[in-house]
Amino acid sequence: MNLDGLSMYVSTTADIGVVGADTLLRFTQKGDRVLARYGGGSIRRGYLVGEMSDGALSFRYTQLETSGEIHGGSSTCDLLTLPDGRTRIVEHFTWRTREGSGDNVFDQVKDR
Image 1 (cartoon, one colour):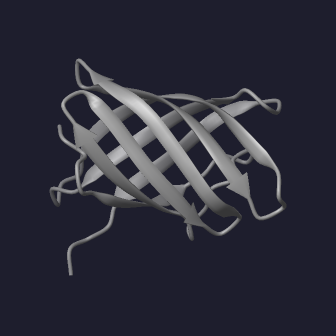
Image 2 (tube, one colour; image 1 turned 30 degrees about the vertical axis):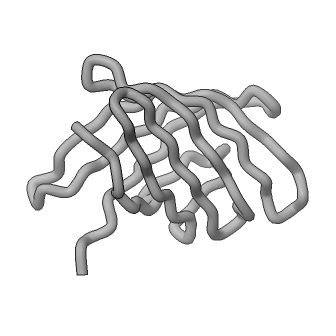
């Protein structure tokens, strides 16, 4: 699966998560390297840097929140294809700068 050029929104977020329905992620992928910029809602700007290996995505993320705080952590992800052909990422995250972990779901934005 290749994430290059995909835009995704957060369709489900963990109680301890900070991203939300207003957060948009834009992915770039070159080979196994995966990058994304994201923002919206309570996130001013965020970055994830990761690697695709054997159909699974793992990454580290750092984000500047609207509160002015900077937080980050790491994630492993399951990649799925929805019945309509769109991509879904189920993120299993662990904070490094605050307590907790949880799951978020990112869904590909439908083409217009």
